[in-house]
Image (tube, one colour):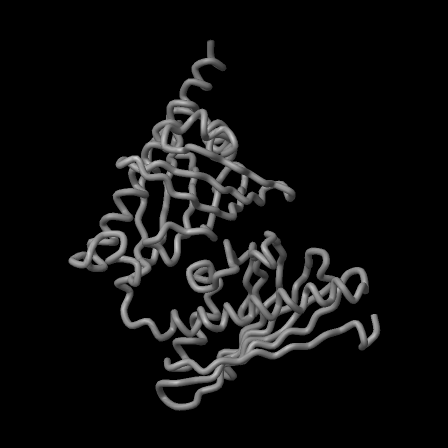
Length: 317
């Protein structure tokens, strides 16, 4: 690799929030799917003091990618450096740093630095990476600013629905993982398109019917981890939502299985009058969304339970 194949970029933004608050959002990778539009799922694989290994699943130029990065935290300097350990083509290698610089007690500047090269050395691939970095960096910084400046948590809601299954974790997982079969298995699903170029990394588009007969199209990226969980993030959202992340969690409990559907949503307040009328407020929108999502989740959970318990009975006969 020569210096001509390495490219460096820097993006920055001013945020009207204390530097410590902003640094905490950057440091807590588990919250990234709620903050950054490209991030679908993020988890810490291992941690040793200020050093950690994280795995990220995110979108880039419309495709889904996953990679691991080593991060080094410097709380005193309020910086987090990162270096991908296992990049995905066309990226050959990538690293960089988040730096939070206080401007006052209530404002700061955030700089996001990247250095990268292409796996192939092809200039076209390097340009593709540059476009992805520019697009993602801009959207990440704007999203960080929005999250840090948001007063209160009234627009972010998390809720669970759960069932207990007398069956196997594999049968439950298979039902949830095999979304291409949902038009036959789930009455509220009218159409499904599923892409899975990388095993366990799915792009799911579907038309969902509501109780009043309306049909909504959503598109999600799903991270499928046999036989424990499926995390997802919607990239095409219904009108009332500005954010929707979720997770199907499958856990053994004694001789049975606990299956949980978890949703985290943020209301698109600008669309409330259009969807629910001029008299509706954020609380009404939250209740409406929760009822709709819980209704579909519980229907799916009950049918997954039926599928797994039927499979268990067939295996035992």
